[in-house]
Length: 488
Image (cartoon, rainbow, N blue to C red; front, side, top):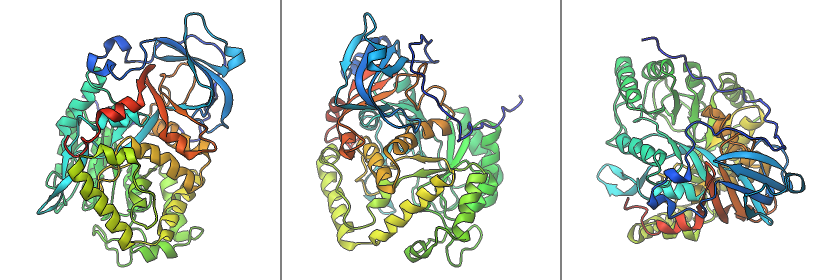
């Protein structure tokens, strides 16, 4: 059998013009209709209307174009049918009207470092991670996520099953691209990590999990260049992509090997670590980051290598901000979502971290500035939350927080929305279906109360999340899993 060609992302500089005219469009492939949903899922829907208009919203369309007020969006059978000024679009006959005055509308979020597992206590070897197949999918959807890629799996069969259950309409949740079990060398800190020591083991690992339906892979701290190179080649031969949370391999080395994506911004980069030896994991001291000049060649050479090789960078500032003092606590809803006994441990850990002041605030500012420099230099910046650290990053709530952190980084509101929508869709090669509010695309939309341009807390007031034009009640989804995170 001839292997399919390696997947290629579309050009990052492509222009996505917004069509503002009434156009009839056929539904994208595999659009999920209200009639296909189980009673369990329909319980969280706000309407069974298949033809409706979101009237008089402030629209941030995901393209990066300036926000526009007084806009209306018409949806029919799961597809965006018209986008334009409210006085031009009018009210199509038979369309249910959703009043949008005082609300902001953005595309559904496309997030690229998500998980279905979460730290649920400790054992002799460190953190213990359980899969949360019941609570996490509705949490993600409640937080505006309509498409996501898992950033590594410790229970791939469960992840694949959850993906299929969501696709079949049996449970509420976003579309899920499942990443296979980690590409790791000997000594990984979780028992579930494979230990790959030879190129052939890496190739066999990739082929085995590709045969079972995963769509990408994630390399981890202790893998060697030889083994990672073999895994990348095997994945590309079958149309999959490889991302990495690396330590033993530098970012520049990974780019040369052909990696597609790197996680955690530059937080995990060891390119500037003193005494770094090939294939050896050596952390980068905080002082090195603080002293690194962002207009100097040591930093820019790494950035330019990533841009030249079209390596995307995933921002995960949710897990980075907790390392410095003075940061906001998880919102009340996120805390209430955690199982009460575990919640006490999580918040005690947060308090201890704040008291310990493990890193200075300037470190977080530097990490943000490094990501912004990559973005400004033409790199494809995407985002995710990584809900696996101390337990304080809860799906849904964390995805909302991501937008606020991107604004703090210095992006405009339009740029921040683009990072969490169109950029993610571009990386996944789905920009023709999702990621922007455009005629002919899936009606994946998030309606929130307030003006996101002036009030970042607007992201905490999501009212409706539309996936394939089906309106989900965001507060009801959040409420449905209160007190369950940490159980399953």
